[in-house]
Length: 511
Ligand code: HEM
Image (cartoon, rainbow, N blue to C red; front, top):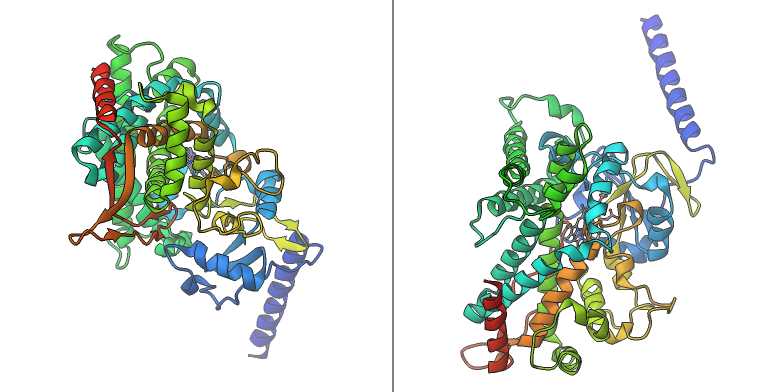
């Protein structure tokens, strides 16, 4: 008996010693973790973190714990960077901070692991970024302008018919732009087979990605549990998700390949056909399939979020709308609708776009980066595989940089391109470092042409109730990863009979 007790004691001491030496080897300077709320054993801070809008909580924590806050989701170490400076120092400057954590449910089980936003920092990620870069870098992306222009016009036309459906038709517009650019698929309505598949996939990602939503994210061994096992319902959800991922990636690419094989595809008519023509290494087709599928999931809902924000801002801040319209009327006149050629001559519109990206930032926590190995910053220790989120929301609410941050006020950026006291939202709204959004030039072009066309042709005002009283949207927003302003009503009315004529003529010209 005494021997067993002694053996147990020695084993425990050895384990404690091993644990300590391992920790000391990883953290030789013995620096503390960043400050943060006290975690519970095993659960960590999981119960404190809301599934949606968690950036508001982290922004409050900034007052208590400072710019760098650490907490735990079960065993996962999470760090929130509340200042632009910290996010830039770590996520932009350091190669060690460019990885992604494993999302067991969404990534491994459902199969998103090989798509760019989820893929680990390594050779596959590099290949995917190269394929995207060749078509989406600032010098090449203009190729997609005609499609962006065309679908913005169709959006204006949809608004003439059903202005109250402005969000539904905005979704359709974003779907048309991406599907046409990536696959040259002609989307007529939201029931389009490829769009339905992609929208289902987005919903499945949103339902499964919140870290706390599935235990398997924290206890990877649960991956092995068969679906018939009690409590393994997540395996059914995962299997369903995997099927969608496969269909949404395979089907549109098959369409592209068919067009190419039958000789009806024009040269370089879409992102996917260009990539298939240009990249022919072993496994290229699989890479192109994954990348193309990613573009819809990463590019459609984000664009809708930004443009919804714009429409809300116009309803709430009429003086901004008037100033923007005056600039367009001065530069473009009223004999035509604006084009991409007018972009340089419309600096106030440029400021409006910046303010849209700041006021209701699309991804308030970016997409979390993770550390490849342990690291130090500002006197704190970051263990390996720490999930690091920039709290972009907090940056946009920094009153020193953006006085009266709730006000939609594009003037805050006017003439301040070189001013170091104010950070241009393009520096954080599209992420940081090597993971920065590869679709940013594409997204900005879609935003520009939609915004400028809308402002030229329509007045956006508050809706009125039956008694003729104005309904003021409360401007609230919600979301888990992508932030969306909550549904709101507004009135979208053509500015003049001439504007209607120009839209009709423009759409006619497309036929
Ligand atoms: C207003 C619209 C958009 C916003 C605000 C936005 C923002 C972002 C942000 C914040 C990230 C994370 C970067 C990081 O981890 O540091 C990201 C990643 C990404 N975005 Fe966008 N995005 C938008 C539109 C688009 C579009 C239109 C596309 C494609 C055509 C796209 C493709 C991607 C991809 C593939 C990634 C993953 C990059 C990687 O992990 O290496 N995005 N985006």
